[in-house]
Amino acid sequence: MLVLTREAGSSVLIGDHVIVTVEALALDVATLRVTCPPELAVQVAGPRPDGHRTPVPHGDLDADGPPPAGTSRTRAVLGPDQTLAIGPDIIVTVERVYNAGGHQPRARLGFRAPRELPIVRQEISRRPAAPPAPAPPFAPPAGAAAPMGQPELPA
Image 1 (spheres, rainbow, N blue to C red):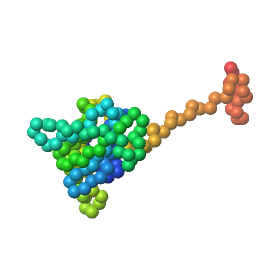
Image 2 (cartoon, one colour):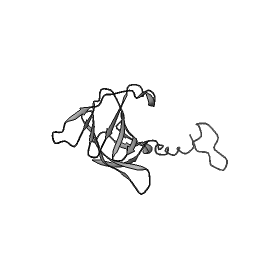
Image 3 (tube, rainbow, N blue to C red):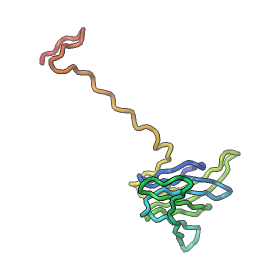
Image 4 (cartoon, one colour):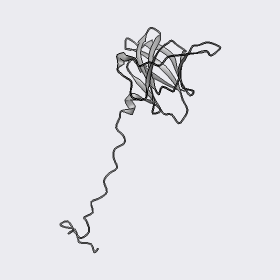
């Protein structure tokens, strides 16, 4: 399980199609918004011994504007040790909600997903890719004169 500390307004990307956003934090609860394909069921499971899961209805959450094409949004309010199951393989657990020394409240969230689904903080995913490879050295076109000061090579 990967555990990340998140503030309100921050997001985590899981694979290419699931975004978990911390909408609000208050006392010991976290309001999470899940943006995912509509075919992925989103369910809340409490710290109950029977492991009962309660389905959370998908909705467009109009206040946030329409969801991206081919996705839906779901909002859930979770307390400590409650989990959010997204589809059959992804589990998000609220480990703890706390206020660290007068700073913004933060939530420790645990993420469990198959190895082939990367779990990335959204601010990391926005960083530019690795710098481009250096350009190959200049070679004049065939039949062109060599630059000044360099001997001409036979063709």
